[in-house]
Figure 1: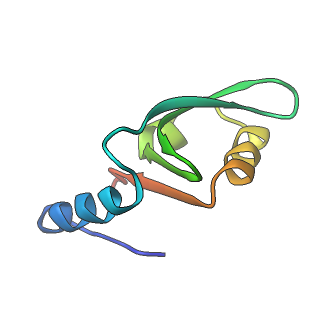
Figure 2: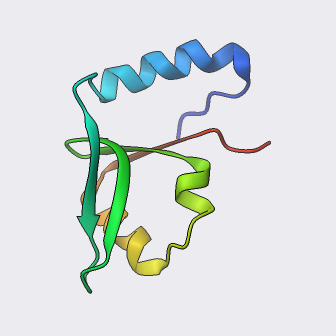
Length: 82
C-alpha cells in the first residue's frame, strides 16, 4: 500500500487520488449477494474512495466488505484517526 501521513502530505495524497479518480467521478452504490445496498461515496471504474468514518464507523458487515472487494481493485481510505 501507499501511505500519506500528516497534513504536510495532503497535497501529495490529493494528487495521487486525482490520477486514479477523475473530477467527473461521483457517488454510486453496489449490492451485496443478498441485495443489500452499499453506498460508495466516490468511485470511478474499479477505484473507490472512502473516508474512514464511512467505511469503519457505520453499520457494515462482512457481506458489505466482500462486495466492495469484488467490485473494486483499489480502495482509498482517507482521514484515518491517528
